[in-house]
Image 1: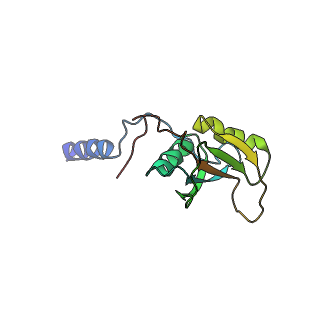
Image 2: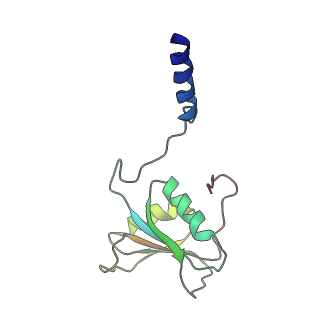
Image 3: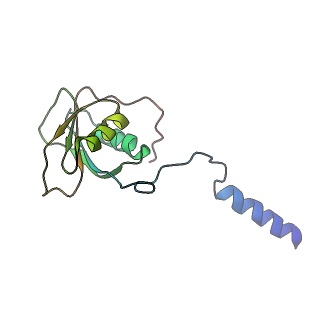
Length: 131
């Protein structure tokens, strides 16, 4: 009976993925969360998803991602909708590129809109994508 309990405990430990030592930042855990929408404005498929993953890794709360419609931009724009330019600067640092603009808009229920331009590139295979 004791052997069965030990085997069950070992199986549960292995199934829970106890080997992952990397900690993830939780948006809003240590400070106020920055809420962001990420829009692909370069025509390349999948860039909004990659940008979303980069920002979430930095602890930024992405509430929506998708396409910017027919807009095509050469460079990435980070548009502050609520707050000060410092909020946009945090997003720019997480992406590693972009120009911060302040266009306050109280009708949008988020802090920043990100329009990914043609200068945006995926950082390689350092992001784990799940099906």
